[in-house]
Image (cartoon, rainbow over all chains, first blue to last red):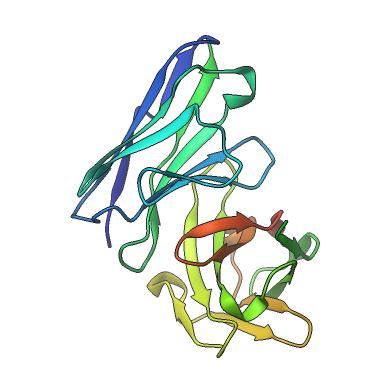
Length: 107
Length: 116
């Protein structure tokens, strides 16, 4: 199975900060990488697919980059509604696998 | 707007089975695969398997291979996930998630609690 490693596992940031989360795959997954946001008690929400394509309706403050094994999710200016846990997921090969999550908290 | 509405919370005893449903609406049911993903309390996301509603074909994670069954009913636009031989470690929220080429929509989740 492909292992997905996210870092950091948690971070504290202030409103208005630029935040970057990284995700590393244990083998080449081309650009078959998605990012999800999850708030407590809620279902995940799809943010980005194909490493850098924004899901319909997702604000442009979210951006993704990378290919192969190294990927990043960037939030350009953190807002109160962005405090959540973020997961990466590879869909190049079954079984689909997720990163362990990055919890973004208020500083 | 795509809708995936799951069945309600369940409490089961160890060794029992549970069947969770996911009713789809507002899109062509047979044009999108459906995943099942679970999340244990305080933990991350775990992929369980996928079903093609068009022909009913499935692919399961090896971890669940011998005790999971995914089915669909095209007349009611519903997919089902049945997990048998439940143990305490199966306590989790179970999600269905729609997939065209990638996951784009999720159900609201179904809490399954396994307790004696």
